[in-house]
Length: 35
Image (cartoon, rainbow, N blue to C red; front, side):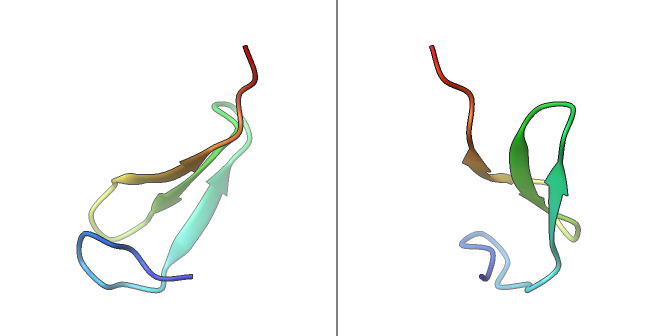
């Protein structure tokens, strides 16, 4: 998986917010929260 914003492949999972984000630019890639 690559960041759509900066192209980095340094994607990390944040269990606190249940989302994946880019470690380079900080943009949230994917959120898993259900309403």
